[in-house]
Image 1 (tube, rainbow, N blue to C red):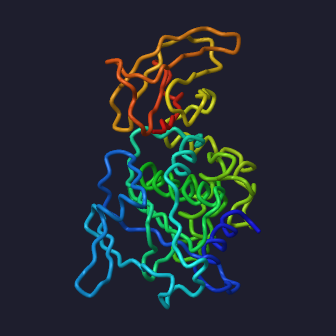
Image 2 (image 1 turned 90 degrees about the vertical axis):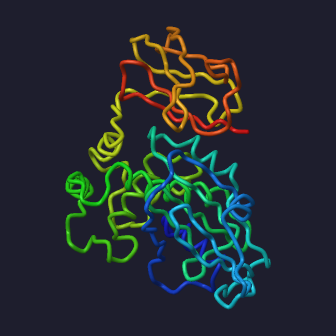
Length: 331
């Protein structure tokens, strides 16, 4: 079973009766996009700040862009065919943060509101993503770490696509040619695995996700060449973010709760600027030549000496715009 279909089937197995032999579907969200930075709303804060109950007892999720979705609050609801253990089990914010920390695609400035839903949406029970928005749907049994990482990184791939290569961008022509999906059967109305948006999100997950997000080594559409074997695909996708693939900077440990070390296999010593998710520079680190290239040490404090707040940081050496790395700072 390929990775994406396996994950979709796992989610549906938790929410529904056994699946028929058709492609599973995860709808995208046609959201306006209001996020200025990456914000993860855990299930408790989503319930507290974005959910309300109407006079008839129905619960609604109200998104920042004004859209509303009714939520299914009981596994005894007729729409939940398989009640599992009788409870809904949301994604865990720590796992979402860990998946971000393992992501190898630096994308400074890409914002999104990530909502870990306490309950699934009625009629749209699966996770979904749109412009600057991700909704991660719970299961009726605890979700594995692999499921959480792979599902989130796939949905984040949609956010990256909407931000860096929206519909109508001429680079879609290049992507479809590289991916060999120029045939009209690959369209937005095709079966799930043949939709260009879904292929892009799967390529993103498979090429740039961490070990848990890519644990199966496969993608949803098994008829397509595995992304790692497609000449020029990884370089094309990195190029969307202005990244030179020959400049690979790493950070360890990542995620971190404080200090960490950056390394780059380069002979050029340059200061390393550290930015928060909003693009503000919070620290500048001095380079230190080592046998493997250049190293920078970060003590976890900003220019004022205060500890960096939990969240997402980006680091980039000066004069090397193609080299960048994302770091997740845990609480």
